[in-house]
View 1 (cartoon, one colour):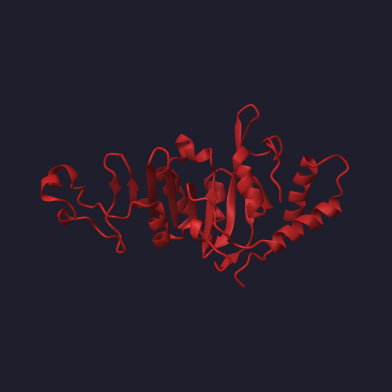
View 2: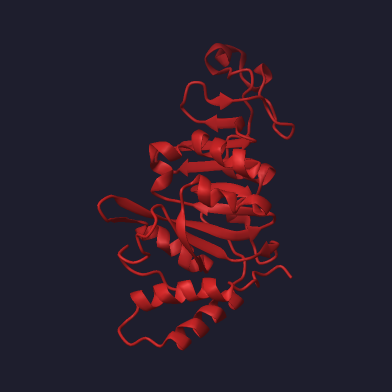
Length: 253
C-alpha cells in the first residue's frame, strides 16, 4: 500500500508518550496519549512537504545520518508533529540545542528538515552532504529563498560533491553536467549578448531545485497519497540529554 503504516516499536512509542506527558497538562492519562499517538501514526498518509530547505539520503542507509549529523535522543513522530517542530526548533540550555526532523521513507528516500542547523557553518550544504554521502552512499542538499532569489542544490556520492548549482557564487556550477541536464550553449543567447551572458562551460538549464530533485531523488512538493511510503518520522536533538521540552509551543500530533 502507498501509505505510511509502520507503527513505532513499543519502546519508541513509549519515548514519545514520555515527551507528550511532559508537554501536556498535569494528570494526563498515559494510556489515552498512547492510543492517540497510535491512531495518528496509523491514519497518516503521504502529502506535499516544504520545499525551501532540506537534505535527502537513501532510505536504505539513512540510519547512518543520525551519527554523522550528531543527533541524539530521537523519538518517533508523525509528519505533522515533525514539521511543526521546525517552527520552534531552537532552545538555549548553556548552549543552543536544535530539533531535526527526519521524514518517513518516500519513494526510497528520507528527507531531513533542520531549519536552524542548516544555516550553521558546520552544516553548510557541500560540507554536510560530503559527510552524509560518505556514510550513506548518496546525499543531496536543496535551498531556495523566494525573497532573495537564492538557489542552491548539490548532490554528493561516497564523500564527494559530483554536481551542484549555487546562484550568485563564483563559480556557480560544481562538477560536470549529469546525463539528464540540458547544457546551455552560445545558441541560447543573442549574438550581441554573448560576451556578457554566455555561462560557464558546464552550465545547464537545471537551476530549479524542484527540477534537480525530481532527477536526483524526489521533489517534496510533489509527494502525493500515491507516493510509495514506508516507516515513520523521527525527531532528534543536536545535543544528548537536552530533553524534548522547552522549545516553545508543543507540536500537535
